Length: 123
Image (cartoon, rainbow, N blue to C red; front, side, top):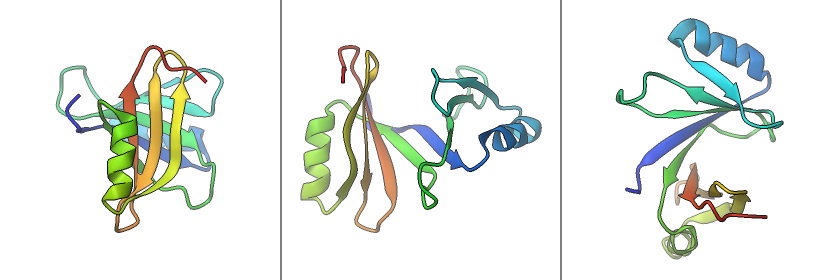
């Protein structure tokens, strides 16, 4: 884990239309994640420069595109974010048997995501 941006999320009103657009224009491929309105995006060949991400149904009309940063210790990172002037938007949340995520605003109000791998994560 290197504190690098490793994932993006594009929220949209019509995920199918958005996926068709990105598939037609850029050749991206999509795979639904469970039963959620959430599709993992593969933007290129494994090993090529760049990152993959996801497309989701908007949960709020103001939901922005976000980039997620993979970190080692989500609890420590959330503490550091608040200590440094950031605001937690969505607290530490489990993705069972995969890891933890959270969202925060930087001091300028931009929203970012955090991800910590943890096969022992549970609700």
